[in-house]
Amino acid sequence: MDNQHLNHQLHHQPHHQRCKVHLKACLALSIGLLSSMAINPGIASPLSENLLMAQTTSLTGDWRLVSITESETPTPMVPPQTTELTANFADDRVSGSGGCNRFMGGYQAEGNQLSIGPLASTFMACEETVLNQEVRYLAALQGVQRYEVDDQGLALFYETEQGSGVLRFTAQTVRGLW
Image 1 (spheres, one colour):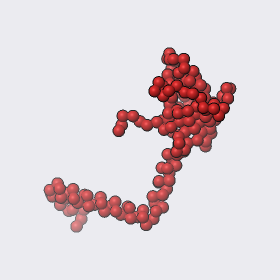
Image 2: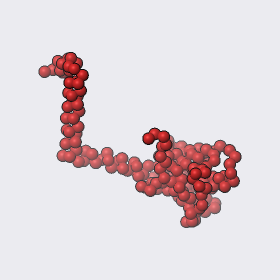
Image 3: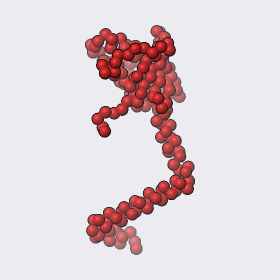
Image 4: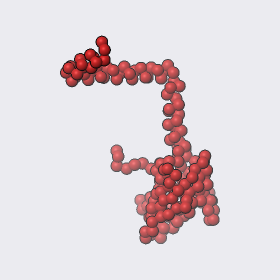
């Protein structure tokens, strides 16, 4: 039976009969794909390894700052209920919130080496504690020299005139989609 004749027969069957035929075809295709992956697991491995690698080594994405360490000493931060410090890395551009103002600029990454800046920001009035934290944060970002991404999040290692330290981020979840 040729394809044209089969298509004609399918179109003249009741809707529920056509759905059964399409469902059987999809099921057969799925079983075939799963069987081929079971016989040759190499088919599935590269894709899953690449996805895992992308999740654990990519700088690209939305990040929320969870801690600032200066000279191996954690620095107190303004409570997150008051302010949120973020960074978004995409297409050689970085942007985010310093807690009060929005910032933006460029970045260059090669291997685990990273340089950020110069950064520009809006200039809104805010509480002194928030502003002081923002100044430290933006200075640290512009002093970043390398980064690491793992299952704990993103770590940016920086050096400024005031000393060296680490900015630690967690992946930022998108709100309102679920």
